[in-house]
Image (cartoon, rainbow over all chains, first blue to last red; front, side, top):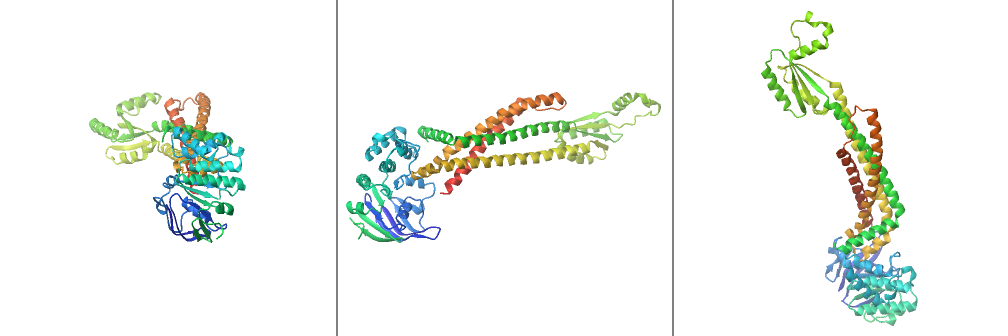
Length: 226
Length: 295
């Protein structure tokens, strides 16, 4: 369960990214977060991921009240959340396998379990045969799949996707979104910030639109344009 | 932390060292140079200290006593003095013995012809443990003016020795602190370069929920390795330089008690090694803490 109560976020430069956002996203939901650039989509994701802190208001994610977490608790909180990016954020000098396993090493998972979980994640995204490749040897879509595999390898309850198809061709974008719906079907809440009209309209899900830091629309099985 | 995590730590450290091998070599060289200077200073300082102590240990205070004191009173006073901190020994010099030895030393003067009675008083010869106590001991014994007639001591020399020791202690340790700060500064900056080179990796580590301790670990080990390697090189070179130098010095100045015993040298080399490891880890810690805070 993700709950925003009157959340305001003002950046140190004075930019008011969010201006009183209240919303609730139940478990296992798939949500498109849409809106023009600078509307506050990424800020919402960053606040959930605790890369940023609210200026006022309250965010509750599952059992965590984010404002009450101290610096030492943040890493443990983040282990419940997977995050994927438009630019993948992969380690170029590590293989596909190592990139995905990295997330588990960080959590001190025993090596036997790491092998099992990484194989499962790579299998799910369809990269089993390329585990010893380096990211640069793969296409953009495949790199995004590594990023997805890394995000879900520890089976987080929430998956945050910041424009995951932003750098991909339409065909690969569809593939990625189908993959995300598959992950959603495995009991993971997915929040996907996107500009992709075709995808939002093609696979209808709940749509939350933000504009100028405010909630503009919240629609079950919505479309990109109202 | 399980074995898997430790292996991961070590692997990460080695990757880090290998990836930034040039910077690592520069850092090791800088630590070596600094610690060679530190070690040389410590060796010189220890030797000077020993020489100074040697001079100090030869310092004596001579108390000429009032006439008509009986031997028991003198012995009592002698024992009282001997119990004082900083006094190594007090020797009673009987005036008859002193007069005889004086006469034999100056037998050509034929003193017996002119002086029939023994003109010398009984005296006490105080041997000090170190020069630093001389002033307070003199102030103390001056109080016994019913017993003591005159006090003779190498006051000026003692003062000089004392000033020299003080300057050396203050100057020496200031210099050592300065050198340690300088090398710390260099390590902080070298590790910072490694941190910047691995910035992306650090941010991904934070992204996947790595704790600060987990992120800092490999850098701390990296700093430790740089420090210990740098220190080992400097200890090797110091050992070599000192063996040659001390051999030459002993030949040229055999009357000075230079440090040649293993215990003192091991202490100095051990200090250099520990300093290297500490500087390395501390530098890495400062560096990584700063870069993590910036996020």
